[in-house]
Image (cartoon, rainbow, N blue to C red; front, side, top):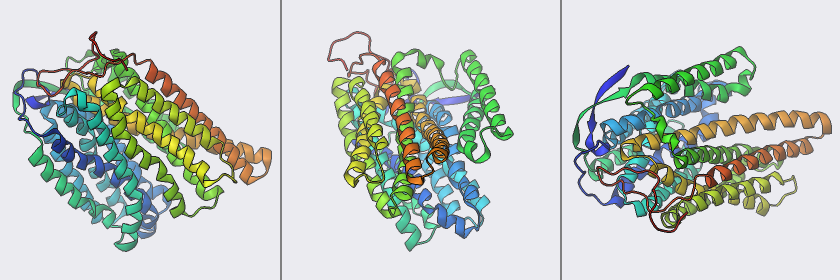
Amino acid sequence: MPADVHQAGGAGAAGAAPVPARSPWRILGAVGFGGFLTPFEGSLVSVGLPVLSRTFMTDLQTIAWVIIAYMLTVSGLMLLFGRLGDLIGHRRLYRLGFVCFSLGSLLCGMASSVLALIAFRMVQGVGGAMLMAVGPALITRSFPAHRRGQALGTYVGIVYVGLTVGPLAGGLVTELLGWRWIFLINLPVGVAGYVMSTLLLAPEHPGGGKHRFDVAGALAFIVALTALLLALYRGRAWGWGSPLILLLLALAAGAGVVFLRLEASRPEPMLDLNLFRSRLFAAATASALFNYLCMYSVVVLTPFYLIQLRGFTPSRAGILLTAMPLIMVVMAPLSGWLSDRIGSRIPASLGMASQGVGALLLSGLTPASTTGEIVLGLGCMGLGAGLFSSPNNSALMGAAPRERQGVAAGIVATARHTGMVLGTAITGALFSGRLERYRQLLQAEPQAFTGAFHDALLAIALVAGLGVITSLVRGRTHPAWPDLTQAGGSAGAPRGGRGRPG
């Protein structure tokens, strides 16, 4: 049932008092702490899983829940917190995210059992969902339209820095300080982020009136997405035809139908389905899903090629894999700047095409391929992801009205996590299935591995092709989106007007 919520005007109430003027770049600096912290911690912990497994004397399947619990919590709550931020204020929820994430980090660092650690990771996930859900909304309401792409591009670059630095820092922290500091290292960053957001983010003044929060819709969405992602996460381990996986998929489908029916009938739904009537919004959302599916599929598969087939050390493989995020860090702000001038359609489409080329190059790798060939394929993937993300995010956020900026940001983040899980599950299952098939046919491990790797990367290239199509059908977008920095402004696809199309 809906719950009454007093709305903070700065978050988007119609007629709300405008927020005090603050330097938008300082605001981006404050939001950047959250953009760095959550991916940094996610990649940091993954490196420490073997140490955690030995410390708690448990197997890999059990310790994997340290990652799974966090990811499910973040994925299930981002859209909910995006909508809640629209109602009570993005600044308030963002600051609370730092508190919750820091508290979860402290508890994780003090955990005395693997079950406690998994539970405390869920507390971390609640905070991470708050930070990731409202961060882009804070940026879009602070920057004028002609700088939105550049600002979001810088934010995406900060996210990629966190992803790049995390694995490197994880190894050093685990080796020098011990596993507890994998979590405790977040505390100074969390405190600094809270202080910065308190000082630099403008207070949001109440705009008056009550708004209903769609509790039933939120619960149905959480059940549907969590059941689906859990089934995808554990499908290979538990068996795709096992009763538990089938039950989870049925639960996801049933809850999904309930969610859609609720959202279609509510006067104030958690997710306004009318957003998807915009061709731009719908195409940008689908494109984002394809982008993250491609990107994370390569992140998952390539280490197996480097370490198992080529015999590279983990450190050497890690250095080679940084080619992808390093190029993303450079390209994300540049592509955002470009989209402010020519629109999102061209750079986003070129980005997905570049990922397709990168996947094709990687599919051609053999046991004798040179390091340069490996880096070239990974570089094309990184170039594509960097070209795509900022323009697409800017277009998606710009296509949503001001009072739905939190929901739009939540959709971006949910697409990212869903694409990541889909990429991991689908390409993992495809690679494993083809590997068994080639082993039966070829009776030679290197050739079987190469064939399975080739087929999986070809599938990724096909997905990238779908991403090119969805990026192109978004229409000829105008770069001069409506300005969201005014309290009464709303953003949708511009109708008419002059200027250079994208």
